[in-house]
Image (cartoon, rainbow, N blue to C red; front, side, top):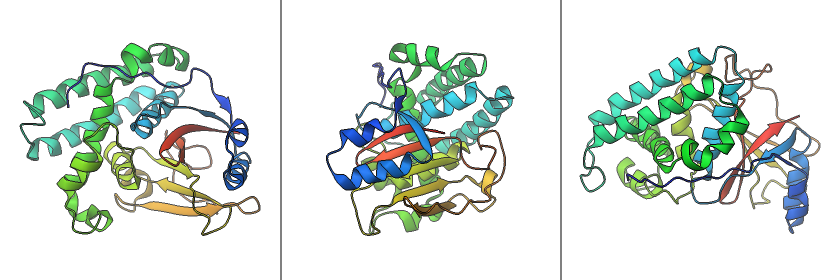
Length: 280
């Protein structure tokens, strides 16, 4: 679990979203990207190494934190959620082959994470954030922390997540397979768990390979209890096309929601990859 290597790995510049239309050879992908272009102008690539969701989630959060009024209050709120996760983490049993000292490791990566978010809240710009990413900002240790937070949430609240687990699979078996390896892409369940563990609302625009519903984009709004008031697994799923737009959702208000009440963190998920989306 512990690693001393660091991974870089976001594009220094945002790219115009229409560039993805030219990149894909399949027409249905092109049409789905054109649908996204109605509401988004740019995207930022992340490294496709299996942890692109966690890296995109983290970088998008930090970008929004850096431009937020009252950023120190948000850091306090975030670290309170991390502290609650630490309590749950300490109650769980961990294989000694995975951790020599679970509590010591968790505390050390939380310290690094706290330093990172406080640096952003104190004025680290998105450009500096990128320039320092190779050595300081997106180390695999912090990526591993995000995976641990999701695992802790699933295992400590197994009754809430049981219906979402594959058949005949318990929480720890699922986490060993889907969350601990750093090269395994996040599916919907870890996305939901991390969203709730940190209290961070998230929008995911999914451009999949299926055509069951025609040329449409699947939208997931993942909403923690603090924003929705409807429990840890609250999710709004909708579809939109070139002629339809999902109905506005009354999600709430907060530093991590836009003026229209929708999540500021927005990711683009394509098959086996996640990038960051930027709105008009």
